Image (cartoon, rainbow, N blue to C red; front, side, top):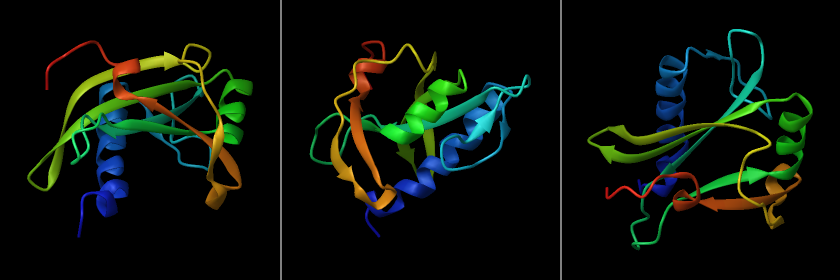
Length: 131
């Protein structure tokens, strides 16, 4: 099975690590993955630092889910990872309020979720770190 087919598996591993790191309670629904101790929703996004073709990884956001998170005054946790054996090594974390993300350019591609999507390259979130 290719890495792209395992993306959901790797994303779940990053979610678990994020919950531990930021003291979050996993509470999955369509528009968020966890909650902070005060009940504030948190969406956890993960991306490989680099695709197999050498291009930087991307975080995918969906417009309707982003709007729900914004309305709830929620947060994002971004985890940039690389694959290590059957698991992942998170190279960098970033927790940001949903109002503090790079400009989003919505386009098609999220039809399976009845939503528009936007991609954020890892370099727009991460410090310049050599992985």
